[in-house]
Image (cartoon, rainbow, N blue to C red; front, side, top):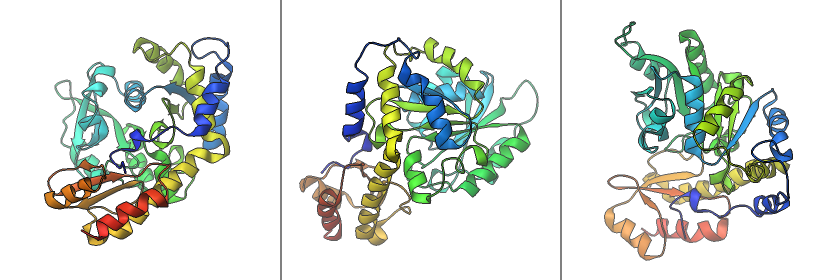
Length: 333
């Protein structure tokens, strides 16, 4: 009955089992056998050499990535409703030691090359104005929309043209890949992405996210930043074990497909109530206050997303038996 957030979902049994298997004595911090396998395993997934750092939260992944891509005196272009702007309590500015977020517009919290140009072109060169150094996009966006490989590549081309680095906040990267049925490589480095925050917690993980650099050399300085920021856990093998378990047998992708399928069923029930197309595991629909109260009285939990709108997030473990009653309740409004 809970559709408030996919963060509220349980961890996968495979993840819990992997933590148990890692509960043996090993080297501390990130020198253990599990952490040592991350680079090769993710390099296989992304079809190129990568450097991978485990971190305990998505905010840490985003902000450590941005600190690597942008100097303290620089600017980071992001959508006005991006998570790094609206929901991270100033952490990007804190981790970068002062870099400024340059806010752009776009439907469905999506950036386009034109929106980025509209933000950075008016900035005059010189020491008096913050100069852009990076772009951050969210895939899937805060409204559940998926950037296609072509859309990312268009932004990546502009970033290269302007000498900017490109970061992807992939808290729901798995859901975007599942919806688009593309390869992780095509949606990231082949399209010009320099760093990816690959989310696992929302998709069945317990407490581990992957920060991925497509230039492995960038990982070394970020290991120091991770320690300095207080995110180098002494028993890092428990985080690495979660990530490896999620990659085994494409568990990350199977979970995302299951969540997306549930959202698609809710979208069918919502009909013309939909505010945005459903391209991941989030459903945004129009409901009056009375209708929202009716759904809550029936036991359903969800997030009010502004006046007259509700956000329903489907988790990896919510199958037809969980989705069906809510779909029926929406149809009955």
